[in-house]
Image (tube, rainbow, N blue to C red):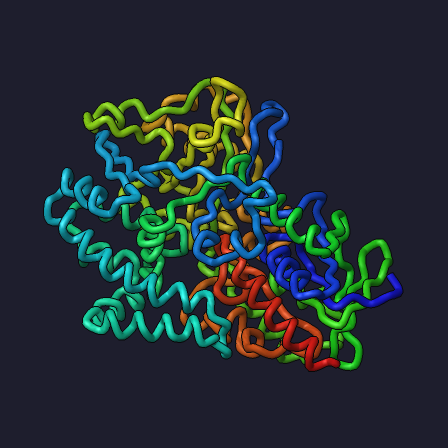
Length: 525
């Protein structure tokens, strides 16, 4: 391409497409390049089980939880381009080995009542805890949406207003934001089932014994307010709606277009060179891929050595713990017979995300991962996707999305095919203690962290690109010198999960990168 564009975006994941959508709507000429054959990145899905060609596999995220509060759905008019969602209620449920359960309903009082069935004190404590989490959401969501180093007046006023209204909760909020998820759960609740519910929720954000991990409990407030937002047709339908939206606003997406080099000349990004030799010149480059991958693509010697080393040392699954994921296709329905019968209140848990794992099993999953060991029993969640969206499996059949929040990135014995098969045998055996249907398995898609690294080109298979932490937040995410309001070096920005506000499906990182690019382009004139 001889004519330069305003912005070239590396990666057609949801953040890359969000950036393209905001830029193209601002009148900028934008090209998005994607190494894979479809859009979506970690929000893509497909028919990936040869033995079950009509079962739709989702290999990463499954919900639009944070996207519902970010504004991206409305700003890019995704409903207009085909996005439809379903909201199971209850959304999540802890499944106890004894057949009892605790359900998380959209209604927080109904949730507290369900907890009280197990332990009256815990039911009361949940509503008190939720007061803190609501305040955390009122403060935290504007903080997530605000641009680090340059907060806008609207989000800043929301944060300040929320802080003033909740000043009496200051000490409690500090304890939650600084504590470990395990500590906070044990401080506030008595019964092992309630603690297991809390740990199962928090484990999705990382090790439950890390300081600051308890902030992940904000997801409970989000669930009550926004629901889960599962797209009909899987997350691929969300990604496809984004692609249609940005195409309509003038952006171009090139698939099967891996980047060989981010061109840096005279200390400034000038565009990209694709693997097939084509060069796309641009005034700005936004990398929404893994930060390490992005920096490794820059012209050798073109970027300051200190910046290169900072990214090389940015932690990605530093604790050797990462998600392990499987999609299991079955020829008959997937049901929770024993747990549904126990309830005797007419509530059906078959569409809820089932949380499996006692407090000890959640803790051991992270401890074993750190050691490189693969336990025989696993903390996991089971999402019966075809129960809430029958389009994802043939009639009368089912699809289970099985997610382990923690397994060893590098197993002590190495991730051989035999270890992978043995691990899945243990997972299916464990899940079958709760669900009926796994005995009718017809095929599976299984991905270890190293498999994910290879498929998506993400360091150590890290779904958030860079680990969360107080020292990897805001302007310091992914590293100091990379998250501020100005380009990292002239013509170059980042805008993926490794940038503020981090992982999860929200599109905020892409929108912030677009805002920064628009300002930088004005300065170039």
